[in-house]
Image 1 (cartoon, rainbow, N blue to C red):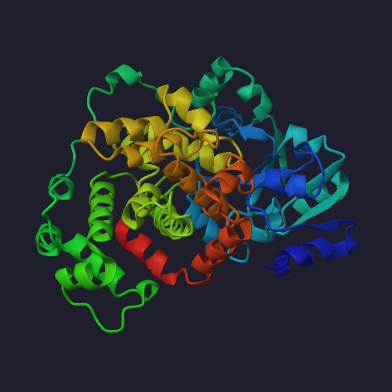
Image 2: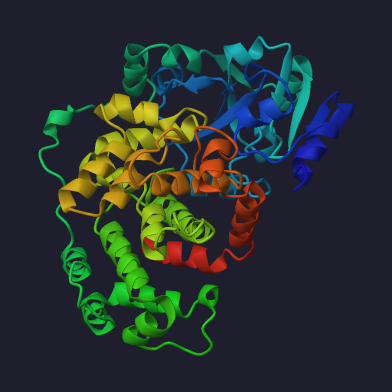
Length: 460
């Protein structure tokens, strides 16, 4: 996608002096700055907020975080972030996540952080993740018009990451909801869903068969519909229409695969969190179903001696971020903080923020839950270590496959990644070809309709 027409027209008005810096497709401003070999502090970004008075665009340096309290006090307004789905309506000609800091192009009021006003050169994304626009500060100010306000409402992100006390203070100061509770209040983990418990008991029975599994799944109409939808999916290439669960299990998907599929869906659906936000149900299920499918596919490419069962590999990808659902289900104020902070500051590592909000991260919470529920050790390892490329202990194949899949999906703008690019050592240890991983990932996005549909149904 090129620069949106209205942005291009604004840039070309009065023969403004600017330069377009083309680069490979990226997902964050930090990656774009690196691709163009310019310091991140030279980039600016837009955060769109709203209250009863209407919409407001706040423009701040890309390496700064927004101080909600300072901005609200400065303007005497009670501002909140605009939800992601509404941003796509406002910036309907832009790529998702790329919002040009050009308020006049979208009839928005604007306020500049004073740090931006002191920049000699301003660089920003123009609505596409494949280019940056760079121009002298005076030309940028001309495009904003005369109604622009200036104020101090942002702080360098580096000062927040310098020490734990600073980041802990940021959790309280730089979010709209300043709520914090001690981890000691976390008295008990959610109970294992009834359907999941029945599936686990069946998995432990060496005489279990497809009929018994179908009988358990049939107790949950929504789960039954999802399994049948999978069996009839073009991804599995069965010629004909599958109308009952026992046939889906015996002829198409296989006993173990359906068992794990049903286990994952029943667990995920038992935890209720808000729909929107970077960690809401919509984002959780979209990333989960793509990751599960990719982990399953990559697992089948491993040498026989380390190749995991399809169903277990799929479930490892599906439930990797289960801890986030537990967090949202049990700690709603903190979950609100994480969503809002991440939305306003997309380049900030969320694991660091989780550690300060609760003293633990989602991978730790998820692993606690896996152990409490008695789920297989392979899945516990995947949940606990899927961010750690240095984990090569027991069952390491599962978290390493999940890590590789997450990095590959992040290259397409799905999910998050602490480090860009595929982990070379992990690929080498699993004997996976990097290009094969990239090709399989591209196939998912070439035929993403079915996975998107599944994610939407699971999130509903």
